[in-house]
Amino acid sequence: MEKAVLKHLLGIEGAEIADLRIEEGAVIVYVATPREGIRCPYCGSSHVRLQGSKIREIKSLPYGETPVLIRLRVHRMECYECGKHPQEQFSFVDPGVHHTKLLEVQSARDCMGMTIKDAAQRNGLRWHSVRNALRNRLQESVRRIDLSGIRRIAVDEIYVARRVFMTVVLDLDTHSVVHVVEGQGRDALRCFFADARDHGARIEAVAMDMSPPTVMR
Ligand SMILES: [Zn+2]
Image 1 (cartoon, rainbow, N blue to C red):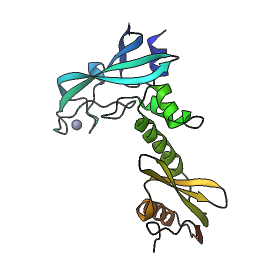
Image 2: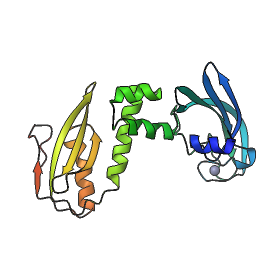
Image 3: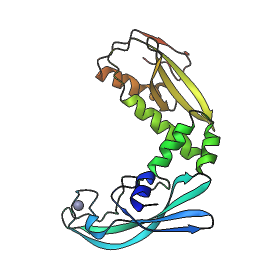
Image 4: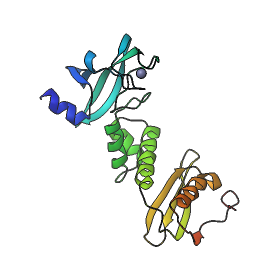
């Protein structure tokens, strides 16, 4: 397969595939940024001095039953422009995370038709990674919602697992989910009411359990 096609399938941007291997039944993709493409993540300057590198192992979308791992070379640098000493950053994986954003999106999508546990198993991820991916995706999708026309809402707290609660706000007129946040009680709702106020919403009715942690003034 052409490296350019594989890059596209794996969601790799700004770096190049240097090598491909099969090791212990997994596809290993070696990825690094060419010297001329390395930029300071703070100011975007290419006027940097490299100070070594390390390899990060990142899980990518599996190819059928075959795991795909990216061995990513991450450069350290000194930036002559802003004076900082950052590590190289990549658009397709968040710092400190061991799987690609594409795999995160796919595992969250899988949760629409299966349990978090099954989605985790299918994608070779931990349960809490998929739970976080699902939460991020839901929060991202509701962040774009225009709240200005909301008048009547319902609030529910859902027990997910391991003492984790999610608070969900539903627009009772459109039956759409308009807010999802991890946690429960008034703290979980403050952010929604602040957003609703910013959008100019005039909420007239709230349907909810009147449990003490949730009652707000
Ligand atoms: Zn800089």
